[in-house]
Image (cartoon, rainbow, N blue to C red; front, side):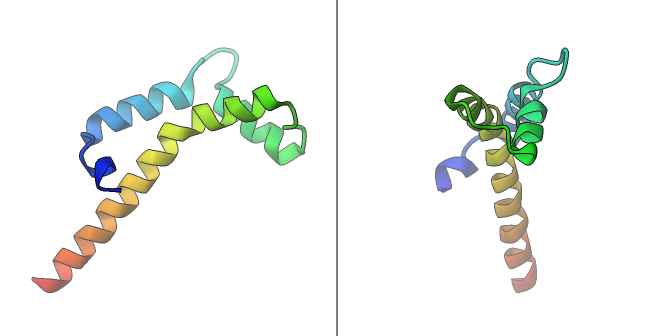
Length: 79
């Protein structure tokens, strides 16, 4: 996962927001697909692909932030 640490955090935040919130109107696809998943109506392959596509970068951002926080705690404890 060191490749994820090499991506600039600002670029990852901007990309995650752009893909996670696209399109803004009438509602972001990610939000729509999450609602479908909760309601049990996420059954079409295109909808599942859409969920995976729109959630990929926000998920990578979360993983990156968790890794950064954990590595910061480890280095902070040794000081």
